[in-house]
Length: 324
Image (tube, rainbow, N blue to C red; front, side, top):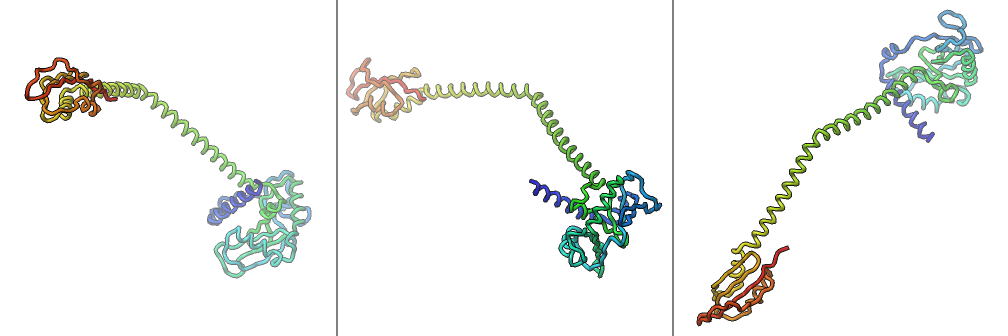
């Protein structure tokens, strides 16, 4: 987890550095607050650059200038590159550019923006022990350094980021703390706003539901009544279809042979009785049962019509089979 947090922090620092380099110089200079500048003599003496006096106890924040005797400066020619790429390259080429072991010095570099002429970059080195002594002296005096500058450099070469990267100085710049505080406040404000908007939307939706509840209940009751009436209509249609005498007459017409004729047709909605004559012989009872529309089919033999030479009498009774 610590490794991931370190990667995330370095990535954020790189992103902020890239953004800061996109800001024009005159804009950045206008945003930088003027601070007091202290001059270090290389031992244990500090003087205010503007007055030449020693700073008082708890002087506050100040830029500290390092004397020329404490710094090594060199001009090099480099292609234009970002701040992170410049720092990475200088870290690899430190021992070649400056005559000190890399573990005994702090290195800082600055490059003229957008220029590639000879000597466009300044590389500076300072003894690590000297910086440790300076930072100890500043802590004793209650002074918080905002920059450690090479006094003789023609450009602003700051050793404080290098000291911070190796753990010699752990205090965050006040401006960065302010921006981090603002960013944290905006994140919390954004989360609170999102939660409040969600809660407000839920409340409004609940109020709409409560307002529409009587209408919804009325619509539901109307739908239930309509469904009940639909079932009644379907049942009535079904009963009518099953009790329609024309339907039974059509079935009987298909079952009886072509030479038969009916003398009596009785239908009460459930029971069918037909009587008549036929010229050909055959099992009418079986024929009615095979249709699947009748049950309890039988030849009653009651009320038999008078026998005539034109045909054989029949008298069939049956009950209609109710469909499921």
